Amino acid sequence: MPDYDYQSDSRPFSRVLDDIGTKDDPKLYLGELVNAFGERGFGALMVFFGVLNAIASPIPGSTTILGTPMLLICLQLVIRGDQLWMPSWALKRSIPRESYRATIAKVRKPLLAVERLSRPRLGFMSSEIAEVLIGIVTTLLTLIVMLPIFGGNLFPSLFVALFGFGLMQRDGFLIGVAWLGVTGFCIFVWAAWELISRLFLASVGNFQNVGAWLQGQF
Image 1: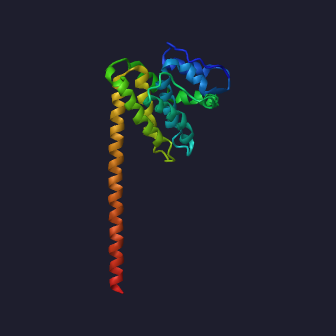
Image 2: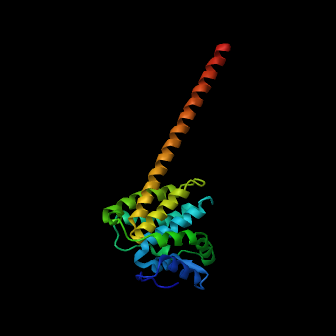
């Protein structure tokens, strides 16, 4: 396993992903990813783990494991860490490089499309205060991702990835889209909860009415 010096890199993000996949080592270590993404570590790894969790979301228990490093990354945004830190045991964790290649192949086209359209803009959306707020909301989203909910963590994972891409590219427009997505998701969850709770209370009321009617018959 190589040493990790966290050097900066001027290659496009998609090129970095491709180059990681071409290496011969059958194991891909988390430390290798951190090193390859360099100064883009926070945003780039949010994209990577967000996409990975979104793809793995239908597999029970997988997002609980994959969400742990994503949670560490988001928490460091909240505390304004100057450089991404990961514990040594996490840096030594690995996944099969072939699985990595398969994952990247699934998302490469949409990723390239977003990369071509993105550019630094609306700087206030990626300011220091904005990054703290993004860290808070992505931490909450990651906690949702880590819950054992079948398919329920797909959109939170994608929102984390979108926030990460916006931070990496300093693209305030993408960050704004992510905020809108989170707002819409929260509204949907609230509306669904209201509907389910009302249906449940109505069912309980009907059950009680039926019980009272039966008691009256006897």
